[in-house]
Image 1 (cartoon, rainbow, N blue to C red):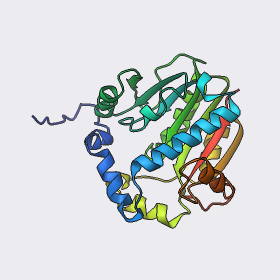
Image 2 (cartoon, helix red, strand yellow):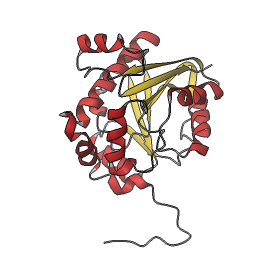
Image 3 (cartoon, rainbow, N blue to C red):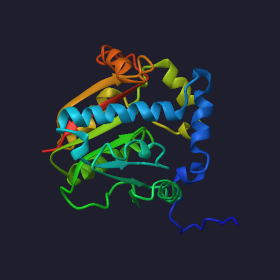
Image 4 (cartoon, rainbow, N blue to C red):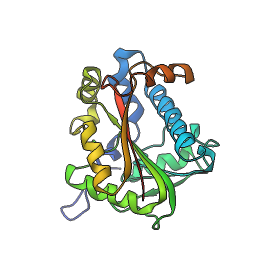
Length: 239
């Protein structure tokens, strides 16, 4: 059964339309590379755990929040590696799928700006390929609220596409739900975190090589200060 949206109804998040075929759309854009969404999700989870181990005394101690979790493709890979995991998204359809996939993880729908968590209640948060879909005028407010919910000394990591990488630009240009994306340069992500009060802000590029496994991640890190990788992450510590 279909429904018609009335003029006074709240807008339907665009990713509701892709909640059932999210993986297929991304894999279609990645087809030329021989890699798929599961590969990239697994490697970014490994990078995230490495970061938490290095900067927070061990990922296994961390209460972690995924901001813009979507259908929670890779949350099963984080279960048992962090102490607690939660996810939020503006798409109710995506959250419904995430709950079906991962019954032991807490999921919430949110309005895109105000996180449904108390002040200083989360150890660390991350957002993977989310902010290029957030309207530019709303990005600062979202980062402000992420800072609000993090405990002092907490960590926030933004993973984003590298707009200087031509392969990345090709993938974005051919992915159906990236048609309205506004990519962030390194300086954009760093400015968002710094302006919201995060300290020790730094960026590292990733996927200069297909970094599956600890050895290849080590090689990938050799290029992390150069804008060669397909993606990057920017980190900041809450105060």
